[in-house]
Amino acid sequence: MNMNNSNEGRFKSAGDALKELQAAFDDWCSILTTHSLHTAYAIIAANWAVHGSAKMILSNCWSKWSMFIVLTFLGINLFATHRMIWWNYKQYLYAEKNWKRWKEEYEEYQENKDTRRYWPYNKKIQYLGVAHRGLKVWAPIIAAFLFIISLFFE
Image (tube, rainbow, N blue to C red; front, top):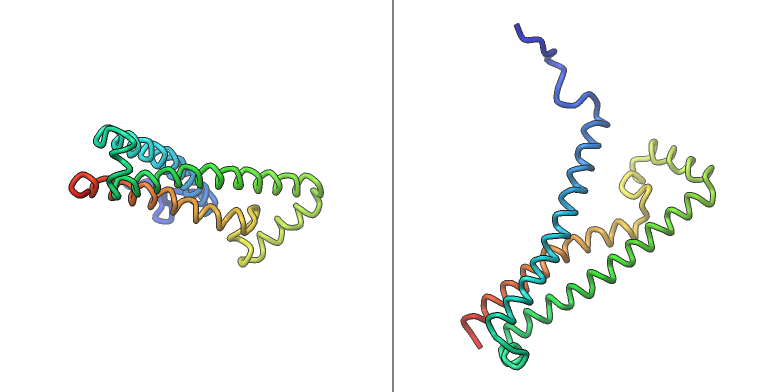
């Protein structure tokens, strides 16, 4: 006899399902951060290992662009991380400064579907998060592609 109620599922509530989605999102973002940085370092090492010197890297336009993109990515990544830390800290101070207002915004967040996308984060944090994730994917891919081309063309 099946003891499971046909209405029972994996989650006890919609909130439980949402919490799992948030945890998965956080985990995958963490993995993306780690892998994109490791890939960037590997591309730098590969360029040095294959081309042997700065002179050789700079004489191969594909390798030079590969290094330019990966180094630019590392710089932008540091800057974007700094901005994200700063904006999250400002949001924390905003909440701490006026707890009553923060609770009212939470209530509005619960009722107004238009604000669900942002609260408790502001638009800057949301937009930078999306852009930063895209950068972490595409910059290493493009740099790796250019490195591979540098193996065959000068």
